[in-house]
Image (cartoon, rainbow, N blue to C red; front, side, top):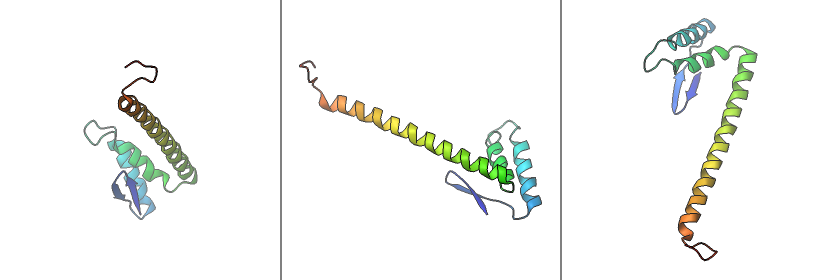
Amino acid sequence: MKIRVGKYRIPVPRSLVGRIGAGVTLVILGFIPGPPGPAAIPVGLTILTLDHPRGRRWRRVTIVRVGRRWQAIQAKRQMRRAEKRDAVIGGIDPEGGR
């Protein structure tokens, strides 16, 4: 089993004890300051939610919410770019001004 984080795939231990140990370790390491610090917390929590039904449901709901929010942000960004492009390409104001 592997967890996909962006373009990376992280292998997950097959045994229950290994998954719990890896998840707890990553969460604890997430509190240590440094480059990999805070990024380890979500990965550790994701590993810990693999074996619990409520955790799996929470993870799926969160992924859907984040995905919908991301799509809304992208749509707004495209609309703003299109408005700017139309304003620049048009060049002349339809009311006679410049």
